Image (cartoon, rainbow, N blue to C red; front, side, top):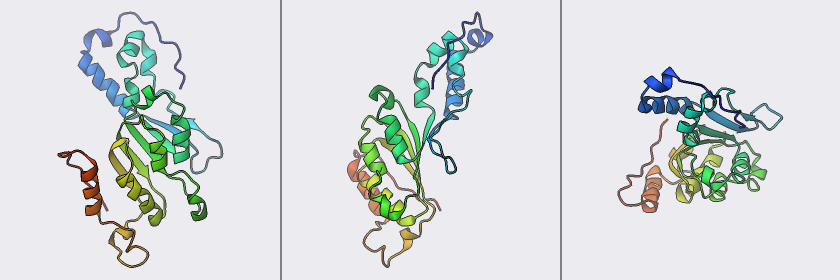
Length: 213
């Protein structure tokens, strides 16, 4: 978003009496509760980018606060993309020096007809196309289809990079406990996922898979 000119304030009680450490905590709290959203909503017809009009107000209060924050807000806000295609489209044109500072990202999977799913970009493909990502947390809001979620989870765990912690919200987990068709050849137990992560990561990384029901 475009940031208007910074106000040139004089002496400030906040700046003169509040220690830098406390000011940093305040900045962190403000930006950690901010979502920067891109893409079509469930009932929208127009591509949208939404951010609270006051979300970046701290950057405009005065020059000193602007200088203290600089680009650190990028590492603290959550970038929320409504669709993998939107994520790829937006980040593919952002300089890698800025993409590499993003730490929190949420992606909502769009509901796609099964016969169109093969031609739609997967989240793993999108992550591979943006190698500069260094996320602390990737949160994926899954499909309303358990098999489609499984098709996402397997490659995310087996192949994808760019994140330290993955949280995947699925609307059902019956496939975790099924043994008959069509599950017997495609569903790895969570223990297999954990073994995969431990093989991929460095020794001592304490990688783990946790399921919440």
